[in-house]
Length: 287
Image 1 (cartoon, rainbow, N blue to C red):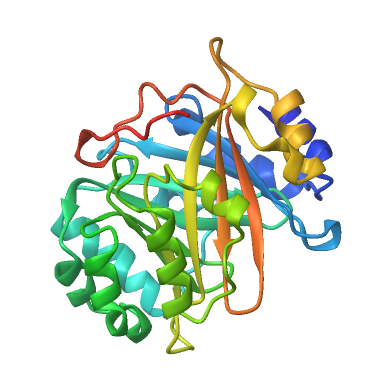
Image 2: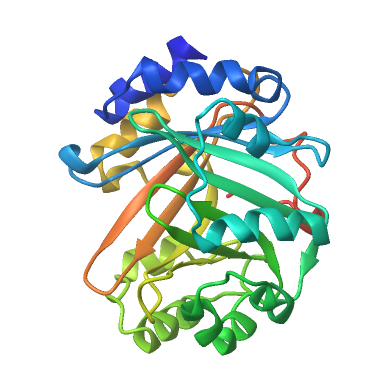
């Protein structure tokens, strides 16, 4: 993994610091070798580009949060997201995940809900940002029940992921309307065509702003169909991404929109996703 993650960083032209990666690999060694692992980067300009390695679907018995805190790799300082991270697992089943920025250390803690949670119940948990509550109607209308919550300790933000959706539930027309309603940059015709089989949508909220920070639409692609022409880093990932398992290579393409810009993301399936337990048992289709 160390060798392969360094190769991913080279492909992404992103910084890599063994001093921050190795302690997380060692602290969660059993989870890295038994969970689903993906590696993600973006099309941000090289000075801003980062590489993240993430393990997801750690079982309900796993407690990576306590282990990371005990090792000094995740610090609680009294932020509201910490309350969410303690109260939600006490109330509902959770599969944990951990996202590591290979230059800065632990970034996100993921909570995947094997039993989908109603929007209103999620919004009622103490510590939720008011911006998320202010977008309740949007959350109900687009995607409905919540499948995943990601708490970003690096940026002090929260992501809410809809349930896994069948192709065509969120249409290009829906995406156009969503971006217009949010006063975000518009999608190009090519982007709308690429996103016509998006399998969920996730929104980013902050505790310091009343508006949504970003919305993102993902699609899983086979390597041969991935839109590598959009950026050289996408092409390098698809052509040369290391992998730990045999079989077809699949990648997830994301387009993220905000008030002033857009960018693309790619996630390589470093280990096969077949063993993963998806919320409500729905598996995103591959295009």
